Every structure is written in structure tokens, then in C-alpha cells.
Length: 112
Image (tube, rainbow, N blue to C red):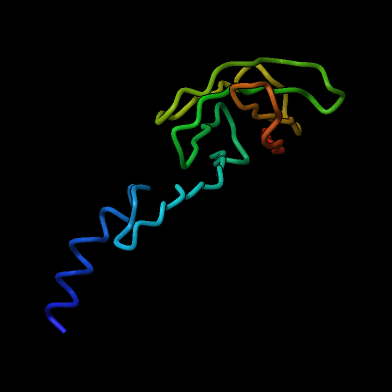
């Protein structure tokens, strides 16, 4: 049993790096689904955008009739802070785009 554990620990890093495994088969890299977190929501003066990956993209904040209010870049591995102090109480739409300009998600932002 101990020998089996040593063998697994020796070859596991090779399998996880996408290199050939013990049997010579090529391991495919695992894709992680992008998760966009927006908080606090509802908000009073600002909200933050974070992702679970090194995502590089952009965002647009619009009101409910589609008027663009602000936009900006999402910097990889950092929290993006969006100010809401100049906007009235209501519901806003946050659209997040990837580096190619494809919309990844849209979230409702509630301003109190």
C-alpha cells in the first residue's frame, strides 16, 4: 500500500500539468468555468467585480432603458471597484465582456 502511495505521488504532478502520464497518453488541460461575483448587491455607493480565474475583460453599466452610464476594464487577479454614488436609486444592468468583446454575463445591480 505504501509503495502505491509513493507511485501515485510521484506521477500525479505529471498528470496534472498536461504532460504525458505514466502510460504515455497526453493529458488535456482542464478548463475552469468563469464565475463572476458582484458584491455588495444591493449597494449604496459602489460594488466590486471579482472572478475566479485570471480573467481579462471589460464591463459596461447601463440603466434599465439601455443607456450606458460607465464602462471599464476588469484587471486579472484583482478586484474591480465601480462607483455608484452619482446614480439614483434603482436597478442597473452590468454586462461583462471577454477580451474579444463577447458578452460573458449580465447581472442586475440594485442601488438603494
